[in-house]
Length: 494
Ligand SMILES: [Zn+2]
Image (cartoon, rainbow, N blue to C red):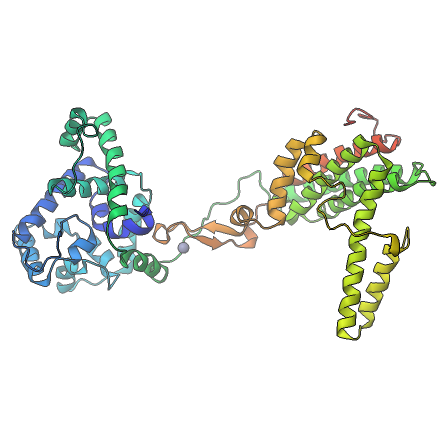
């Protein structure tokens, strides 16, 4: 058994059934069962040249399998009894005629023979309505199309059920469906039908080419439809007056934050005998605030999509600072520094290898190598710098570090989603890069979103600034700096 996805692989073949029940009136389900009976009558009892086990299901592929010789007799019968244009209405004919290789296309030939011109606009209007309603395999249209198919199977004795499954009550519900059944009975029948359809489809033999042809053809036949909804009022486009006011206000907040931090960083005693602790803590916060300062000037970056690296850096800095402060171990600060210098040394070695292999280096390359060398050798000769290619300076991963410092929620709710964005995971790509095409004939495919439509709001930056403020407070406490704003000195110690 293989699972057959309804919209992708079954719907195109059940198009006629879906079309007939697309009004979502139960009467049409009943009417369609009578149409099927009329078609049966028109075909007569002779099954010469029909495929083995052929059954009239209402599927296009089963119509297609009706041999040439029997086709004209059926069409004549339907015309004679005055049912042809009800069973195969003109709009359906237009829609199916758009696909020269559609199975069962001969059914609409009488329309084409009358000189009906295929109007793509009419075809699309009808088809969109039907397919749009039928896409959801559990929806009314899909379910009732399946019910009709199920009826044909049962009527032909192709399915049977044990007494345990088909209880007297269920049997009663099936007998009354759809016209005389009450709501509960209808619901029972339909849930049963959906399950049965799934099993029947997954056992049906051979893949059809039609579903793939149908969906692929729709790209050329019908245009994409993109959302025209404007962003909600609280969302800014980055150019409005509100955006400019927010920008000014936020910049002032960020500048005040920076000034307070810079003041503390420049006046607090760094302990010149052993300055690593002070330098590491100041460096971590300084880096985070520099990022916030920059992003504050670019409203288009105030989204998770573009601001994720900054958010991630802020949370990371806070976790590391708390971890370092909580452990209160001078060696840890040294490790943090050495871990980074080790990577710089590795870069230096790679560059030297690269230059050796090339046999020469331009001035730019030489200058860059000189710069890197200076930083590698800044605190100790590089011979004493070891290279650690593990994932983290402390030998434990960020998640554990976060849990240990009571920042587990920050890790899961801020750091992780920001990381998904930074790494370009599918969830982040899906949310930001695409919008969904609204033409049901394109089956919810993704269309590249126009960057002008990026939704920008100040909320993201407010959150960043808030976070940066908390980070700065923790810094003041850690380095014993005078708290410029009074506030919660010492209160947030981990
Ligand atoms: Zn589209």
